[in-house]
Amino acid sequence: MTGFLHVVVQHEEFELISGRDDLESYRFGTGTAEHLFCRHCGVKSFYQPRSHPDCWSVNAHCLDEEPELSVEQFDGRNWSAAKAKLDAQQ
Image (tube, rainbow, N blue to C red; front, top):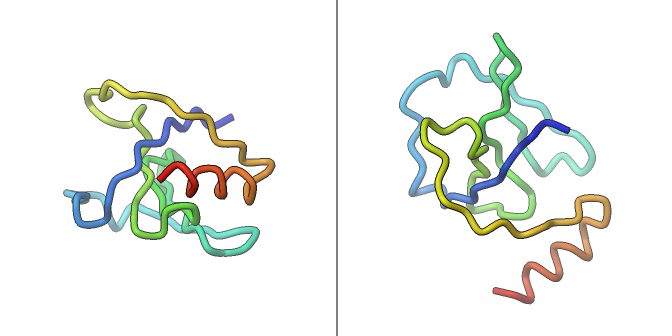
């Protein structure tokens, strides 16, 4: 519903240039993922997913130029099974 197109980026490959003070954080469910959004407009441009604890998930729709992507489906309703399938592919 939010239109989030995930681009998974290693923590060491990510640099937030500005706007850190404009971010708010919330957690729900297991509390593992940290969801960040702009406290002024509500846009969620990136967050810390529980599926990739060593990465940020960046919303490609928030980038100045969307990268060419190969999209892989992830079944969030059946999170544990989808994560197991993802791990088996790596």
